[in-house]
Length: 396
Image 1 (cartoon, rainbow, N blue to C red):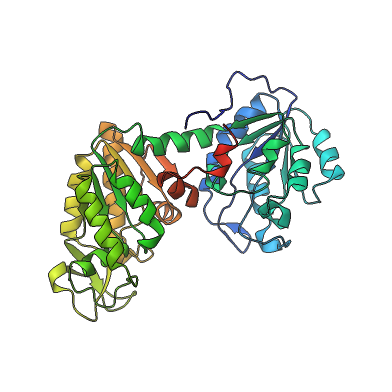
Image 2: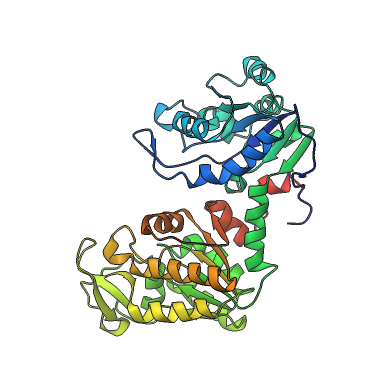
């Protein structure tokens, strides 16, 4: 994105207090981290700042505590994880954002880190409160937003804080996210294919309409494909489908024709009578009234694999089926494997995004390689949609 001030690699940060907004919003169960992808992505930049002898103040949220101190959403497990991974002194601050917090940051020695407890424990964060933002800004001399995933939010630690710190920059992780998405919609290497899955068309309508203008083909998979199948008068049985979807699907297909963008929907599928049932492969013409479509079928997988082989850029957002059950993870795993093979063997540009997609990739147990794995969720989709994200606009 033009005009964004990126953190300069040659900037002297020795002895400087640097506020880094990161995304450590990881899934927890019984206070144990279930997926550490987001933390692992943050580590290289933190190690770089440690090496350059800066004093680091980390700000992150976890979940949606709505301004209430909820011990189940504490960053303590994340703090312990970071402490193990980073070879430096690290502290965890659980107090108010006030003079005490400022004193704690002033005590930091070079290369030390202070992690502030879940910033959403303060209601002022989500309210984008200016006086709260000023207190946050007062903790450091430099502010770096390295949390693209939160940049669609107009919140204190993302937006208003930038008014109260002299030097503000975008971090390398944020830069990488923007470059990855731009490679699909702006600086693209044709042919570009987008594989869009998940459960609802409605959550991705804006994205699909924006992509239609700039990509060569869009493959629709997952439960959202049921809306397209139903529109084309195929039986979808008891499968997940949205109400009042016809006009949206009609408009997508019309716009695709105008923009010469191919839309592909499944030719066959794996069905079952229940979510826990046995998978049966059926062509789309033979789905019965009591069937539930839970994955793409072998013919569709073959078509998708050929499309991947003939693409130079792939953007994939949303699993192909009910991947939580291994019976219906075949399509998702096949897509992941084929994209990975092409990325390794012939320099395919591959951008994988969305929480469910990342979960599916991690759950697959396969050794996979992609150009960029995005954990940005909502921000990823909004940027793909062409929206100006508040957290990015203040970095220009």
